[in-house]
Image (spheres, rainbow, N blue to C red):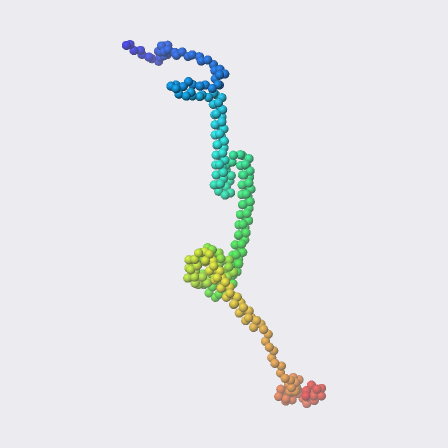
Length: 283
C-alpha cells in the first residue's frame, strides 16, 4: 500500500479529499408541532405494563413555577428565622447588622435608634464619671482631715501607721477609707496584725461586718472620751466662790480711815481723831 506524505502545502487538499470521501448523513425534517402537542400523550405499554402518562409543556411549566415559588417562600422564611436567631444571639447594644433585616427601611430605623441610644449612654456614663470623681475628691479631703485629727490625738499614730505596709481586701480598704473613724481603724489594724490577717481570711461580707463592729467600738470610745473632756472643761470654767466677807467692827472701820491701826492704836493726830469722831466716822 502506497503511503501519502502530507506537507503544509498539501494539507488543505488532503483534508478536502478526506471530507469528500466521508458520507454526509441525511437529515429529515420533522413535521411542525401542532395544537395537539399540548394535549396529553399516552405511551403504549410494553409487555402488558400500564400506560405511562406524559405531561404537556404547559403543565410542566406550571409545575416548575409552583416549585420555584415554594422554594422562594421557604428561603424567605428561613432568612427571617436566621435574622431572629442573629438578633437573639447578638451582644447587648450591638450595632444593627444589615444581614439581620429583610427590609432596608427597618434596618435604617434600627440603626437610627441604636445611634440615639449610644449617644444617651455616652452622656450618662460621662455624668456618672463626673459624679464619681467629685465623690472621690470629697472622700479624700475628709480622710485627710480625719487623719490629721487622729495624728494629733494619738501620740504614736504616724509611727505605727508608717510601719509595715497594711494589706487588706479591696472592699475593706474602701470601707475604712470612707469611715468616720477610718484612720483609727487603720491605726488599730496596723498595731494588731493578727486581726488584719483574720480579716483577710474572711469572706468580703464577713470582713465588712467585722469592720462595722470595730467602727462601732471605736466610736463608743471616742464618745466616752468627749464626755469626759466636757465634764472636765465644765469644772474648770465654773466660777470660784467669793471669799467670805469679814465682819466689820469699830477697829476695822477706824483702820480703814487711817486714824487708828488694826490693833486700835491711834495713828493720826488728836485733831484728826476728834474731828472724825465728831463726824461719826469712827466709834
